[in-house]
Image 1 (cartoon, helix red, strand yellow):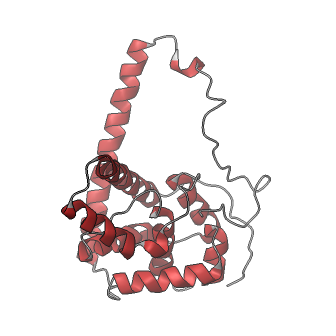
Image 2: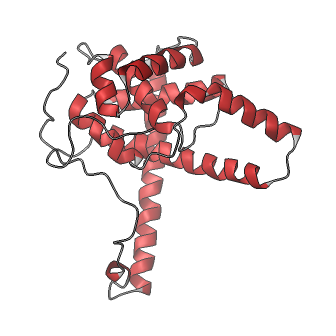
Length: 232
């Protein structure tokens, strides 16, 4: 397909994208906390072995620093330019989950999740879509080189033992699980908001300046080119 199309008209992200974002954000938050606890504990043989296996298994996916673009914004960018079948977001999560089950010592954290997700979506698109974009296109959207994406695709295939088939029953099982987790997250966020409204009825939190907070990437084509944000 063409190497540099214009983005499609902005629209609400599909529910499958939101479910994938929620699942990965929860997974990464847990694992970041776990690895942080390991780093503050006294060295022990069991911890060292786990961390060594983890870094070796996902070394190709590790960034030099934590990407500044949030997972959901990154997924929305991919969806906007690639216009993937919504089922790709579910299958991509199946691949990530399958990978960590095949390699239990492998840990998905903020330093590797963007690349792992990009490679998983690439494979899912090739499996599901009759017409899919080539690797060079995906690499530009994802903010890495074509050479690196080719390497990540091959690495993920070997981690998966080339098991790319997802049965309809497996798809439905993952979909139901991710949908349930998404609903729970929405309920928790709603309860937190209601609690905040009770504590600060005049909107005190909304008056706090966040000007000096972390910079967020805009998806507006007026500010950013087609080339993806760096996740190095």
